[in-house]
Image (cartoon, rainbow, N blue to C red; front, side, top):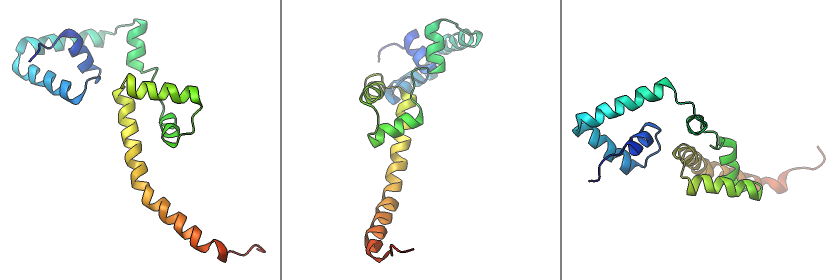
Length: 134
């Protein structure tokens, strides 16, 4: 197993690792007192506050998508430039926060699909029965 680096620990603190990498870091932390001390020191550094533009950008997730943007992406109603950015952010950057929102919205969309289909069938079956002179 490759060693857990400082960069990997930093990504671990930012919740920016895949499930496999997270498990690997956590296994390393269970097995190594030195690694736990290094993680604690990094947490203290983070708590003191790093104020570089990059750190603020990552901490505040300034490039992350809103749920409205993700929903519009799922519906396919975004402007081409915005669609390209959303796709890039989700697929190339693979932002774990935005991917979690995307997965959540896909689950909600799948759960709502039967109700939407049923509503459409009701409408289609009763469309000829509605009177126009109301």
